[in-house]
Length: 402
Image (tube, rainbow, N blue to C red; front, side, top):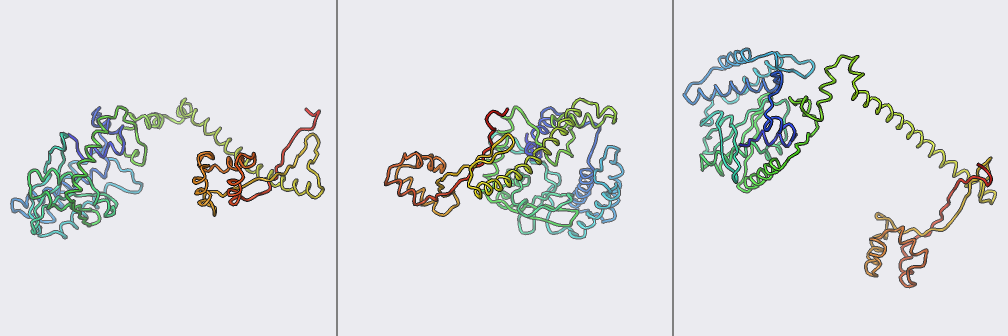
């Protein structure tokens, strides 16, 4: 069966999807990101809160915080990874306590709705494809609306548009509607961003749910027809648990574990370092070339003025000659120039549009110069043209010079 997390994994990186769900490779070393560890502990507290409420037991806030602390210490292990510099285990643990405290104070005495289930499994079918997932909390509000709750311990707040297009809870709505038919068009999707004490809501229309089903089927077909599973590099790569298996990361993973004396001698490292050195030299040469081109352009202007002043067309150097030539060229309007649209309409009307390849101005000017357009059409076309002088500077070697 497919889940929202499986589909999201494929969208983020097909290779990670293959390693996790097809090859079923377990992450080495038993590592767990501190953010995931924090989320699990807070979820456990809220699950206990609402499971006990179903049996009419209301936990005190202090009791829940004790439970949180016990779960934190019992589950803590040396594989928990903290990547953010300057943050410690205590920072994350305290943020979880604050989230629980804020949630409790906001929702106490927990009588706004009736909890129907916590960690509820939904398992359903979309056109032959099995979909499954777990709802953090499923409830029935006082106004008769079913509610699907999702608890987040993310460190950032998304915009409302994210919730209005969210796939996960909308899929759960499709699944829950099979067990609770009244929920089909009467469900509220609710996200609790616990670290910010913020709640977001959204609803789905029947049309939106139909479109979602089509999109999910399309994505699943893409997954099942993929025989390559190429890695997709991005910011999430730093959080991936499979760097040693990924074509885009395995070499980095390998060499980063080498001591400095072996690292610099590793063949792949030497290839890249040599490439960087040559590329840097090439960039410097290109920069120098641009500077020289600018200087040559200035010298051409000086040469033209020198030749004009002396009424000459060639300037002699030690073993080369600069030849200055002038000719008149016909210039037609460019796409953004005034008169361009009118010229295009005339060319289409006169049958010349295909002849000049959809208004290739260079070709049109060449046809005019060679006399390939008859007199009447020529006179009409020339109304859109401007005649300009073109000055060319050419360097030639003197005769007899090697």
